[in-house]
Length: 517
Image 1 (cartoon, rainbow, N blue to C red):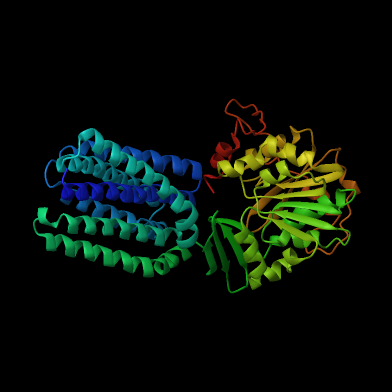
Image 2 (cartoon, rainbow, N blue to C red):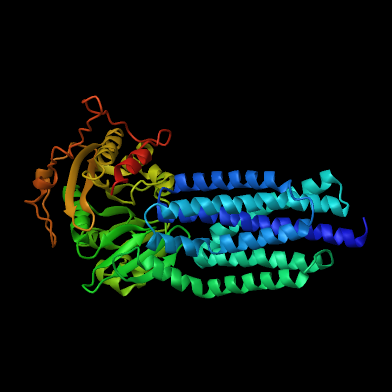
């Protein structure tokens, strides 16, 4: 092989690696878009990966029809990937804001197949071009595929650890599209002697690049206006952390709301109803409360309620996402709500997974508060399993108490009582609470203790806005349509099973329960 042929073959290998990086980034980007906008991350990632691979198969089968002008075909494939992939996130937010329900899912799955097909189309073309240059078929195939697979690893790591947290989904898509076009233009220039009407293709490529760069610098602001329409109130803060998207809104009446990945966490107008029931019955029941643990609660509001008790000596708060804690400690509206609780000398914040923390710590706690997001994906589901609640039990002192937020017994009745059944399966005694929180609806909690729970021992002695000692009996009374008796199709009642790591059926129950709300 002469030097010219070697140079061209190296260009092909490098190109296959780079476009593979772009392809895998688009693949996981589509999964992230589906998870954020459509919900249920496991389902969305499964669908997008499956559809992307199916598209690659379709593209590979059609590529055999291209026998001439291989480099030009590759260039136009890259132009197509750049345009479709580059505008994917931007368009997805626009469709979600303005189009009829369901259109966003159709759009996402369509572009996933299209980009997958174009990605599958390009690899056989590059292999044939390398073979055409003079590289043996087995060597050209192996080298192109090695570049492709290695590029896939790099692309996945780039998206997870840099692009998504630093640039967000809109800018990331435009940037990767620009890379696709750049590769196409470099290949176009290096193979220009083989291409007729070189200038025409170059001008088109440069035009696509300019449009994508405009999208990179200005598209996010427009997408922000699209996303604003998904929320009732004006957005005052938005960021994408390593783990999730944080949105803070505020209306004219100073109602501040925090959303994580689109799910409402609290409204400042009624959060006191939620947090007072979460905290005060538990601390009021526990024999002592010198050492308190909060799992979740990175906004600091639950910690504020705990710190109302002077005899609390240490409060450990474990929240996975440091961005939530940073926002709680710096945003003036959140500081008003949490009264700077996370800066208190009694508070120690640990940014780690709650399951991992309980596995590693050797501490015992008088009170444990579990204030975690609903079990709507696999990673959250493990925090609603028998194994997790067994860890909670194992770190709870005799005479202590735990309180677990457990979603709505009205909207998700089977979910709520399955959580309660799972906690009981660990050998803990339970008491069931629910309270009306206007921004959420009727919301449920499960108190747990090593001993039978007697609420007559509870006295709410600290200042509250809603909860009183006399009100407690009403919070443990449930109506007939929310009492845990789940009627099945035979007219009998379903038997609830504990949720476990091996049998994580709570996710399916959760999806079914909330699909109409």
